[in-house]
Length: 319
Image (cartoon, rainbow, N blue to C red; front, side, top):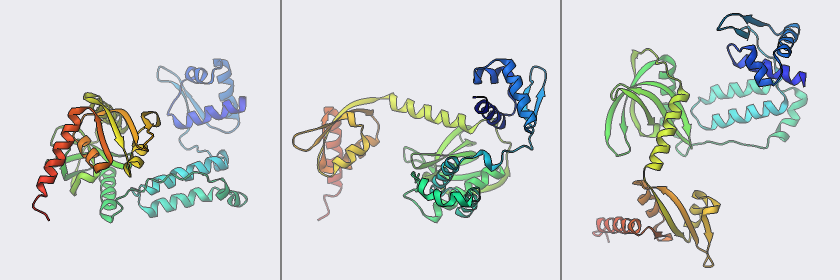
């Protein structure tokens, strides 16, 4: 138990700038006296822990200290390699940079372990986007460059309503959500923080102007984005009853939870669920053509019928 506690304290100190003894005692569920003895043991083992007094005092490991490869097990190296290959599949990081990084991780595996490596790999994380063009890759790399060099960017943007606007933005960071990349930044056009879907950005340019990086964490902006998405989902919802048949049954099991699906004697699937009442819902339902029937609510069924008739009218001159 002591060895595990010493390892946990070391890893915690490596990941934090400074930690107070009381916090260590609380996290390890031991007394302060035990923590002081543990810190002394770590110092004697050659891990340079420095103490600071005062209100902002605590313990930290010297900046120059790093753990060597012996601290990583084969399973941990495999987990690290799997995570890196998943990131590589996003194509947001240049393949040559990722290849070199994977080579370095592979070099940490001993020759004796190399033969076991493929046997232990039981998980693949693949985020390969359906859009794999060089234009998209160039967009990722240009944004990463602008963020790294603290350069302003300007671009055209298509918003949720289909409107085209010109934006000037201080880029802060990129985030991948459900196979889709987004840019967090401070929009000088709107004078507020905004999130932009990369697929809707066009005519991207990096300006020579630099800016003072704002004191905001990327994680906070990501939380704000999630909160807004949740608010949008709960703004107006409706209870749906849909009957799927034919090819649409595959989409039904892909999109909805098992507990929301009832398998009918006819072979159709009856789905009861609650979804946001937003514009995309009509398009989603029309996508399945005659393989889905809106059983409830009646007003939504009427909207789908109206949209289908308008589409039919638009193509009435075609033979």
